[in-house]
Amino acid sequence: MSRPLTPGRIAALLGLLAAGVPTGLAGWLVVDLWFPGGLVLALLALFGLFLGGRIALRSGLGTGAGVVGWFLAYVALGVPRPEGDFLLGSSGIAMYAYLLGGAVVAVMCATLRLPYDRPVSAAPPGR
Image (tube, rainbow, N blue to C red; front, side, top):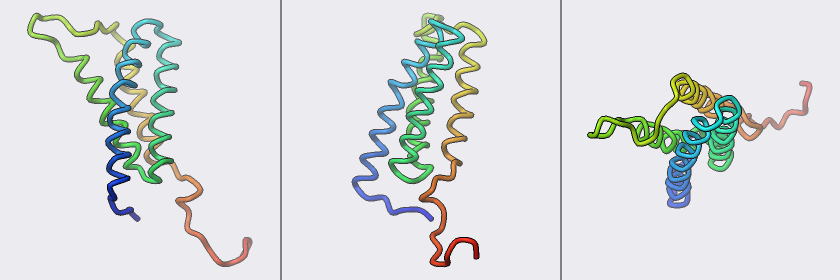
């Protein structure tokens, strides 16, 4: 069941999209700086953003807005410039782990069942 797009929900979606960009940039920097611990820290930040969007909008659309912002930042930082180098360097497997881990976290948060997702029944429990 989808909720109607009101001006408040649209503003929240745009805010989550805008919050996804610096989260993706910070994650790229942290993963590249401290590989094992930085990857965990970046994925926890993504989890907070995606789950926060899911809870705030009570829909997977909240997760999707944050994912779009994060992925735009990831792609913009990973595209080579005309000079032949990258805007930020990437250290091999770390960036692929960040991309795959972020995608897994996004799918987990988008498909998560929260208490308000369950139908409410007037029947007493156990019947």
